[in-house]
Length: 290
Image (cartoon, rainbow, N blue to C red):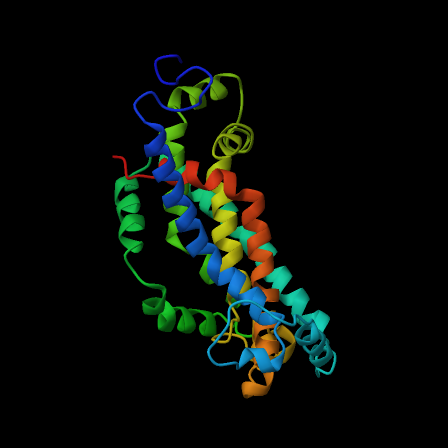
């Protein structure tokens, strides 16, 4: 350890204090640029009407108010469908869809990473090629499949397309291949463990950073998905739909729109805060490996 660190300083031996300061300033500046949109959204949501349309525009708030949030919750109380129904739809779809997304991706990745069956390399190649397709390209085919399966105006219409995303399968497979030696699985089989026991008690704890990353991706995608392509009945619509309708009243509801944006972005931020320690580790070990 003494070859890599100076005693009592915590600095790398080949990096000067000036170099460390430069790195710190670059990272601080990058962090500021990344946090600026969030701070701007929050500040906009507490601005009174006269400050929202002030010229020249001002970033800081002179007379903060929570009137925009009061109007938002007042408008949600006058809906034809109870507001709690929209909240339930979004929470249920995000929670159930994320759990299914992680489970399906993990089980499929386990089979592709350690399964010995004909066509394994072909399936792995298909997964890699599927990463090249944009989600928009698949919209028509997904709509036809969901319509013919009689899944329109159901929760499944929103959940199933996310569960079929190849990114989760790719990340889980690459992480398993690089982090889990086959000798460990063979030792578990010698001890009498079955396939599902090995998957649940050996594989999943080791790849925890990977499935925590999938939770972030899946929850963010499902929470922000209004499902307007497949859901037309009001009782099945999600929270983003109703908040967009409420805030779409022109300039008079600009403050309400800002408050709605803050309400929608809080749950994904909270999920990320609880799981962000494992994201970098997952990304560092998800390179393609033959």
